[in-house]
Image 1 (tube, helix red, strand yellow):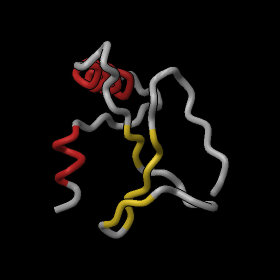
Image 2 (image 1 turned 90 degrees about the vertical axis):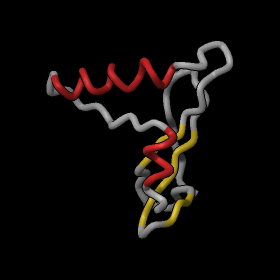
Image 3 (image 1 turned 135 degrees about the vertical axis):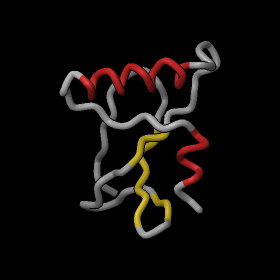
Length: 77
């Protein structure tokens, strides 16, 4: 598996969604999603992160899309 560094103090896992299937990226495969479970101390962190990333995109800075778990799960259908 390729070396992967995701900065920050929050626990996270890189994932790849391709052809309707989820996997851990390996080799030269790119990630498509980063799963960041909310820490116990900040259970509503996703509620804050989503509008912050949307604001960053509105200001023409590079920012990934923040999806809630329900939006992420809908990609499985």
